[in-house]
Image 1: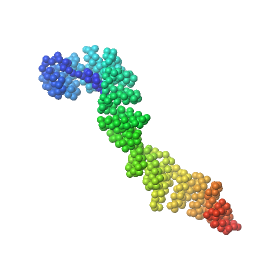
Image 2: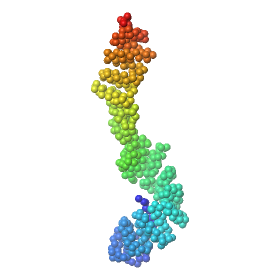
Image 3: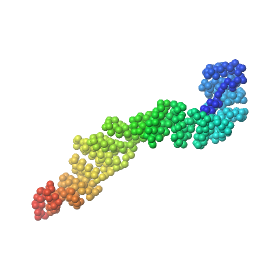
Image 4: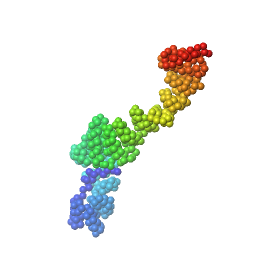
Length: 543
């Protein structure tokens, strides 16, 4: 909606008794003027309606009725009355000027232009009408003609505050900001206390990212008008932006923004920028309160986009603080709210799970690893790790065999996503512990398949096969032989002893004797040395 230029309207829309002084000998007109000048507009309307009914063809009475109707807030009716006067008395200039200003007031600039052009034909040198013409051009968004006519007026009235201000308006609308700034400054040189002009100048400085200059003008506005909402908000925004280089500015921003909220409690912007300032100061609860207020006041897509991520971060920060204080009851809903608002923030769930895991609070750790595993934004390795640790946590928290068995499911899922040697080895061990040798064997074999030179994988596979699959000797023999080949440092000396036992089970006595001899060679006083010597003696000459 086009803004009515109130400065011009105030200048041109002054109705004084002199305008109808030529009719003052008429008693009815005198009485009407008396009521209007006293501000008794309702009474003036009632009186004039009565007199117009008595004298319907008296243009002067109807002109005054139009004036009184407008002053009484009945502008549409005032226009109709003024139009009726035009029909009765087309060259009644006072009425045509009134009608023009009524059209301007209603932002009907096209009709206002018709009236203005008529009046200018009659009074070509009238400065007030020339100002009206410029105002109408601005209303019609014909900024080029407006600036042209205003430039002519500037020659006639070089220090006229209104002319200079309107020139600033015209250039501002054309985005010729340098000239607009120049004319606003000229206008302020004439009238330094013009609040509206300072506001316009501050806006232009802000648009041109000249924030220091904008701040100076806005602060001047607030000094002159302590409740100027626009200035308070802009000052808060500027200080908020300045906080990136000077953290103290956030506090100043909050002060001005809270004053703005007191004046405009239903505007989301005050809460949004206050929330941003508290967020930057890591005062998470204050940030949450303000961001939530902003979203309640404006749930548009734009505001949601601007606010949701910051609100999520604030809930996350709040949750982390609760975690540090071990206030887990408060932490849980805060973190879950953060993730609900922004699923991309679910990485915090893994960190919390790991924290509980470190404290050996395995059941709680598992629940957070589950949340992390359900992430829609995490990488596959992160999801796999979350599943694995969920299973390990459940395994450590298990009190029954059924619990332990259930704990293996997420570990198995993690291996399907991201198979790793160590995780297969762990999975195999967990299966051994719950007496699932077949699954344990499959896991060890997968580990060996991934790295046939893994001494640990070969040794554990061999031991499992020896203990649980006695009739399946060849795979066990193969595993222990591989350990012997890989164990250059002699860290797994017992592998030779178990290899001998496997050869015995396979009825390969000469091979068994050689394996026992090798064991005694590398570990002559080891745990199995006595039994190995017995086997060597017993198998002497065996075929």
